[in-house]
Image (cartoon, rainbow, N blue to C red; front, side):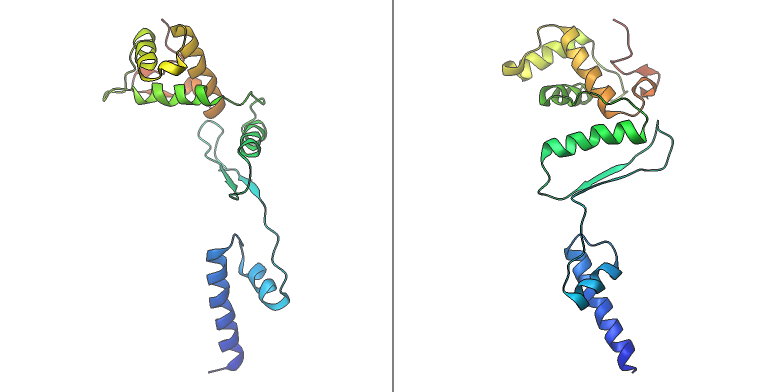
Amino acid sequence: LDPVQGLLGAVEQVGEELKACYPWETLDSVALFLFSGKPPSIEPIRCVNGGGPAAVNAGTIQFMPFVSEQTILNTLKNYRAYFLNKPRQKIPTAKTLKAFLFVLDQIDIEGRFPSWPTLLSLWNETYPAEKFSDRSALRRAYIRAEAALLANPLSWRHGNELTPATRRY
């Protein structure tokens, strides 16, 4: 066995193990660390565009555990503005996001949503400390979250049913 090939194979094996443990993307960066002792730089937060049309584009935001929630939310706003050509929007509050998920959870097996008055009653029973005053307030919260989270909210349909945000009541 060629000693140089044996050494390169060992370096590559150690490199793969280090790459699995640390957020280092390439074996070159791992090799630099092995031979110089200098760890490669890492990006605490990174956006990757999915490359598809904006209506169906699924990009990713990768972040290190120490990145704050506010930084991640700001990055999401900037990502949407840059990659999806959407204006920067106010970040939804925790209650708005909770309302969005709650409404989506109420979809029946055929993809239909309950009426807004029914959704309001269910919400207020489930979350008495976070009541909405009327159905319009719950609907607005859903629409704000939908606009902030989905690339093309108005085209998002369930079978022949429009989402609550686009249904008329």
